[in-house]
Figure 1: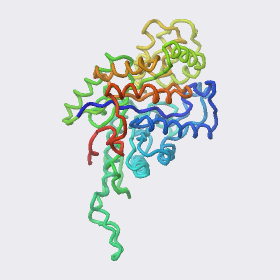
Figure 2: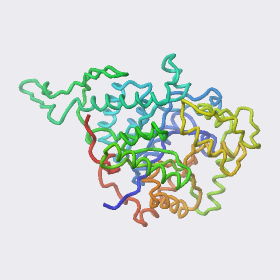
Figure 3: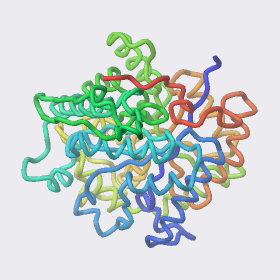
Figure 4: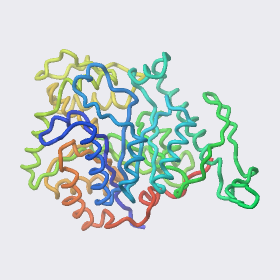
Length: 432
């Protein structure tokens, strides 16, 4: 089968400074309308899924004054969007650090059933002090221990999903027996971090289980992804780094005995104009409206403190912690951004708007060229696209970039299946 590009879109509303852009209407009703519009546009473009990041906190206090309040919770958001779409996958972020396995298993399988088998779970290990402060007084869990907890969380969730098999439901109306009691698999899990009896009262979904995404790029994160993930979301700034990351993931997946490696979908911030000059003008609009103070506050979560720095001076590398137990990959990625081309603090902060992933601004042909370069160069299997919050950019991408990708034989003309697994081609759900 010919290898096929995968496209997902970041769905988070009013991300970063986007609430400031001309033409953007703020408030809960407007945000809901924009969410529905984004999902429908992505489905019109035959995207694989819409993807929601989440942090379980409102961010560092230094960013509060600059952040929009409609920070909707992803499980309920995607449940609403499941009624507004028919084929588009719905990927939610759920914390294996602070969210209980039973709740995660129940919420995710519910979303999978409500959407007809279109759910995906982005498994994250929460690192922010602000998130830890919302779940007791234990503080941030050490980096590698978070991944051990995540491994057990995923094990428990899969056991719960497998409580019901294909022959458990019998619906014997005469006898009044709905389930074959002997066919219910009770997990009775007792591990290092969790004790969960179960079972979960839900049969397998149309696609079996939700698709497992993972977003770690550290040594422990890559090992987790290579062992468990079906899709890896990562931030890589150029093709060479992307290709090296894919090669490492493939090698580690092979070492774990997996018959096929996970898909790798880096983040890609994009701006499309009818010409390159128009795209650059739109990029200037983004630059003029981004809020440096918001980015400074947000970076504090990964132990980078630029408070008081001269925005038009060089980036002081002393602002970067030597090491961290929060997000090692982010710290290293941002340090690399700060040293590429000697940016000013303001320029560096603007680069962080799309995290430490790739970014392209140009005509539809130029954007398609960049996507093709990554894809054919084996630096990505697809992308999680970030339209930079500019109104209408996703429509422009779907109407002008997607047709080019289709003409080049890189992307589907229509959906061939109905579930997220079918869109991604990741095969059957693994059983516990």
